[in-house]
Length: 491
Image (tube, rainbow, N blue to C red; front, top):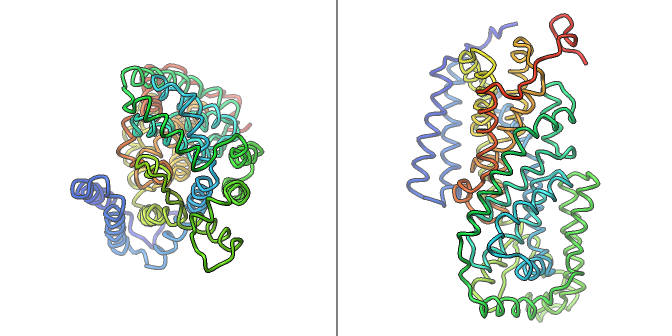
């Protein structure tokens, strides 16, 4: 039944807060550059949400209704916020324990600078495929690879793009990934048919990305000379005494993730494993780090680990590069990111509950004239939903539900919809600075979203490959009409 209590929003109503947000975000980037996500973007999102609220009031929505929409939207992101805070603690304890320095130490000796970018991408792809989590890969291997890149004098922006490309390829193709299970569930198909159909767009995309990273690696020059590299290795040896045993926290996280334990408890247990390693193997370092003679050594040990968990680790190796590299982590380092996500989810919540987002989607559907335009429209809608709602799960579920019947009406198999959802909503989520994924990657890797975006080759290429398949009607599966009963798809 139509909603008689509320006036249906016009297209102008729906687009006004979006255009206002675009203008304010552009102004924020112009005025604050890479620091725009440290406060300016948050203000832009809040003001855009206020504009959407004014339109909601005009159309008959009460404050309580819009507040419930905001709370519901933020509730969707609660899990991501918990993971963010826990990853902050994990980074702090892993550096204190010597886990991250050990990964950097061995990586500097093993990885060839010429093939470093492509090796990063492949390594992250394999691990993400095995555990089904791009966030876990970025929060563990990712921070070490960024460190190795910096120590070698390579471009950390390209490195971050390679990490994200590989992580999202593996996440997208893993049957253990939450988004890989969500997309077929929304579309109405099974996960293995979905993954099989995705290989047609995903594999060519990662191959092209690897070629790009290989080219960048072959043409790049690592700035440190041999002596500088030797000095860095010696400093790591002297400060942290690297060894295979210090990789225990990493093995704990990978094992738990592979056993499909939820991300939050996995990261927390990984953090505690790092704390144990710090207490056992870095005892003297922790005491020297705390340098508090007023308390017992045991309490100083607890205090040092506690500080690393909530405020991160501050390195003092005597080398500026290593100190900048290893001074990271702590829950406090994620506060700005959480602030950004809360503001973004508030804006998305108002847009959704007042019907403004739905009005935009309805208008976009009028552009659909055939199979090609339907799939290309799906890709565009999901990317737009990532920008407006700031969450990849909403960007999968909302367009998927709205477009599902259109695919059935045009006699297209559900795997076409599920693939389009993943080729757009999943892979472009880390490219939006205020999206939960973009904010997570930027905070975890220490590289601004706008800085790594041009190098996230896989994430940029995959939607283009999917759109080209749609345009040329290549690998578009028709619906098995025997599955249609009384206008709905069964089985």
